[in-house]
Length: 580
Image (cartoon, rainbow, N blue to C red; front, side):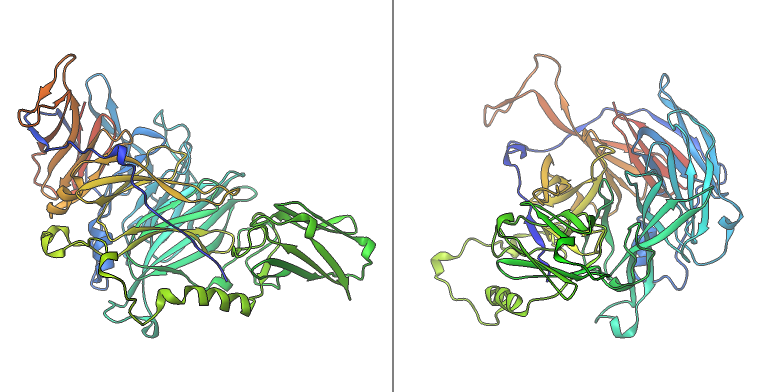
């Protein structure tokens, strides 16, 4: 029995802009630089078998322009010939200098098989991971990307039949890469829910570990399946958890068959090293020793958060406990080669998700039926079929849906879920509600990406904070407010991309026809203020919107925002808008 820690978003009211009125139209023109792409950009369209909504969303919203979180002005694209090009910018003239070839796909790139769009990600400042969309994955040595150099392929193998690359991260130890691959597969009839298209989203968490020579070993860490499309997928620093936001629940598939990432495991299922059980007040762990031993051969050491069990002066089970215990009340027994250790919880009633946090041993929890029944009894009122009667004075004001406009319609409830690598279970969940999803942005290379969702009419930017092992707290911090962005985005039905740079200095909405609207806050010249005639309030800044016509007849297929430049990719040219 596992308890998921659930939290809610808490708005920082000091970051809300109460005196916001509107975005004033600015006639300021931004300089534009363009560079033609010989042969055009490599884009794929769904075939006759890719007709579901999941396929449509994957193909239509795919961003074919790739930014580098380690180098803000590192912009990359893939041509129709299979060449990866980098945009070189002349900082003096503030124009695109040229598109430089840095790497090319091998012959497999031109396969006619059913495929998805190619993608490029950068897990470190010296490595890139490239997916060709037809099943081949490449680990590439890019050297220092601040200086344009040719990339070198370190690894190439057909990993899956057809997928796109969503996220990757380098773990702290040695050459080990964690990648999340995105597939859309058919669902068995017995598993297909009502009104389902027969397709489901599959996320595969795969680990690549560099071996001897040029070989790389791969392990399928876990697999997630759901009937929605993911809005947000990220791996935390250290690769111990995966974060997922979607409009549908994702479940771990074939948990018992998925190998855990451990030096002692090779992907095959085996008997657990120990068993453990918990009640409201106690935790018990037991195992059978491989050889006959005496009591003098057993040593049990316990502190308030650590347990170490040694057999014949050799540590058998050691690690940090999931929660605190009272070490003075820890007891152990030995009977017929079976060692049993009993511990008392410091916080009675708290459900432990596992016994140890960082042990290489594999344990299995034995459910205590009385403990589970007690918890179910406490939660029974939450799923009762009987109406809960309340006084009319106890009800709070509710939202009147009749006062909402059509563009304000809510969708499905979203959750930010954290899946733990060691057991593929959800450990934390943040309720996001049914508000409109806007975008995600990587603010720094060593933090989780921030995400923006609508609240009232505003766009609220949230920064997930990685939970610490000591207090096991997971929260999202409100770090910025984009005034009225939620309402504006909902009313722009033709928007293709919505994005902001890491500085959060502006927000750009780009539609399919090559029109860009930039929303930003500008400061007046020194000493200048504006006075509101109605309220007599003064301000030294303005919220403005700039309209930019890219003057192109080609389809917009990608966009990346940096602090100074907005890059827009069409099917045949790269456009740079100078936003200074």
